[in-house]
Length: 125
Image (cartoon, rainbow, N blue to C red; front, side, top):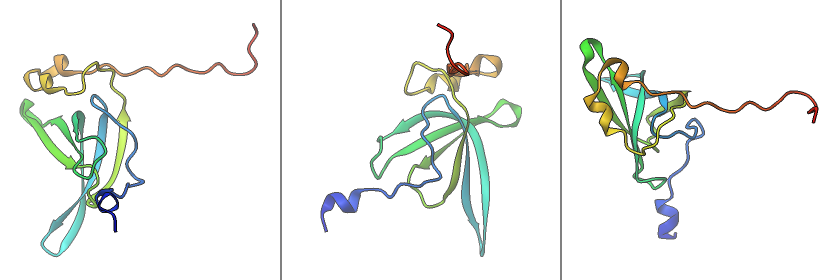
């Protein structure tokens, strides 16, 4: 078996394309003793690391109660990720959004990326 085949990660069909600035909901399987349950973690992606390789991961930041920021790092190709849903596309100009760590409240908001609509019906040009 080729080394390149061994290192190729198996893509998860439940993971759509996303990037820094997007708000995502990650449903992650957690084992508690004999039970296994799914825990949802929703927040803003502040970085993606290592592209598409087997060690690719991403960091999601959310604000917990009392204005405390909680960050969690997820391996992109982990079999423990049940699903990932992009709830909002963010319009940002940076690949790493570490500056959000120093912001609170309204200052930490990210504008939503606008998607141009296609005109309906035949064009009247």
